[in-house]
Length: 369
Image 1 (cartoon, helix red, strand yellow):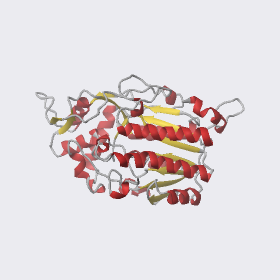
Image 2 (cartoon, one colour; image 1 turned 60 degrees about the vertical axis):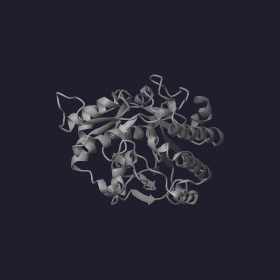
Image 3 (cartoon, helix red, strand yellow; image 1 turned 90 degrees about the horizontal axis):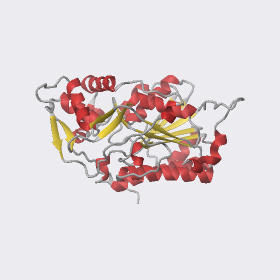
Image 4 (cartoon, helix red, strand yellow; image 1 turned 135 degrees about the horizontal axis):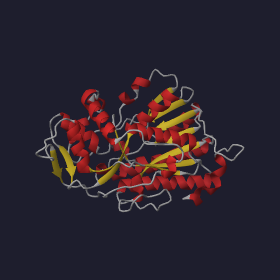
């Protein structure tokens, strides 16, 4: 990876002693900012840095909601636009009219089950969408940081504690689109000196997550006294990062990350899917000591389901990031939010996310080729 970015070292300023100086953006263009992770990043940036301008672009796909960021609409340093990252004219206009100097690209189609029913839309959103942003940024010519949000799934699922220089070996089609987007970023870094930084994160959970993900779906089903679903036998493992910790990671990477760098954002909180659901059951107050699988229904596994994604985040920790929210605290926060605060109407088709294998087929305008 480093060979692709060798020519970009000069983009990160150094002090008189050769120490790296934090980067200070002025106007941030954040794609996918009304989604789960994106809305928490928006909240952090708008509240913590009143002197930064944050411009959000989101098309409000099924898993996003204007309500996720509407409490911030009265903030003078937030601007919000509903639109599609694949709209070249719109992206060009926003970059120029808002004097953007930093792009944080988190918009993506992410739910793996959907890919097996709407695969072309994933390529269109994740690959073509990223390419449109890169080309607009190249022609605009004033971007100092382009932070591309990728996934740990690009490594594949059969090896342990992958480092950022490990070979990408994605095993499901969603991960392939994310790897493809990374390769286009590499090309723009090498060919046009685009100041790229890439993040690869573990599974994220917490408030505002759409209901087709394991933790969110389990919380809601259990709140209705309905059983939660387990794909297969439940022995697949994932490492979990609470959503505010992920937002903090993006903050650290934007300010302190090296241009040309790739940063894993991982957790030591590895859980099997069965452990995750049992913890949701226990935290929801439904645990039956005589039957640990009460309120659990085992269903057919998905077509491709890697056993685990373990990554090494020591590089990011050297920049100062630490995981602050434990699994126990994060699950308590998440269960409480879905029970007490969540207005499910923010997602018009939220009930579709509560089935064992949810799918959301692309609208006709999702497929551009």
